[in-house]
Image (cartoon, rainbow, N blue to C red):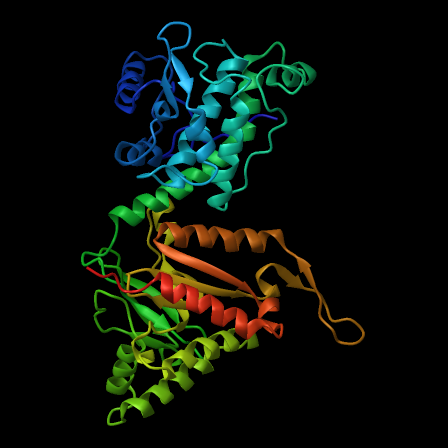
Length: 437
């Protein structure tokens, strides 16, 4: 029943600092503890976890959730209005990830405190449910599974005290700490993964900060992509390069338009063709990369706008785009050269510099096929792991700065599918217009 052991090289186990303590004080205190030899040894390759690095910059200090009380009986008073507002969105200047980390630390600290010596608790039975509700809302916005709390307060019929007495933890502080670890540990681990991705996004971009390696529209065998220069994020297609398109022109500051894509196609694939002929050739080539009717309907609906006045200056809808990175390098310190490949259904590089991903989800995104029945029909069984992998990729993309919109393939097969898409694209393009001075 104990929590998972997290002593691997390069990480350290959870240890929440007091909410009223600044980050600098926490680091100094822990350094003194280690020097004093009190049993907190550094693992072989110890380094601060991502939470320390990120919080130093823009993280939410735990004291931000409180206002000063009378300084004696109530040194800290929870800011109820602020905590309730977190259910709708993060405070200005912070992200949901910042808030989720801080709330997780606060809840961990206070419940462990209540279950052990009872010292240093800052929430009470009246307001801890508010913190739990805010925590749940923020995690759901991050597409993370909120903890399943078997209690909602510290004391009372639904309190932690009642729970531990009913579950044979009365004589053991360790058992109560382990209980809180089992509840909040998975959340902490997921947030640490997101922090690490955020850290990489901030500090490991290519030197120019420009969009590189736009590989898309494969109409045959998937291309095999390897990393040649990890510093500059240079990649190379080593197999099946003939099945896909590669856009290598520098991108203008305000996205990639259909006119620019057509000009690139003219130069590289249809030299001598006029703009209209080249546009038709490029459209047909892109359409060939789509193998589902919902995806085809989406592309037909959007690309019809190219024929309208000013349509060639709309953002180009780019199908089947390969997003690639090497996650195992971060964990193992080794570089095999082979890249993980995540193919986005559609990408728009908008004039406001947004990167917009549009996904059309078929049943294969969340179910596995069963053997054909007697009539040859194939049904699917729900596969939670497939769905979990999909939402994990959503989180990665969002932290990398992308906007993501998903359509169910079923809704695009309905008679109203085209109208649904037209309304969506009208709203999307209105939102992402070129900024004006």
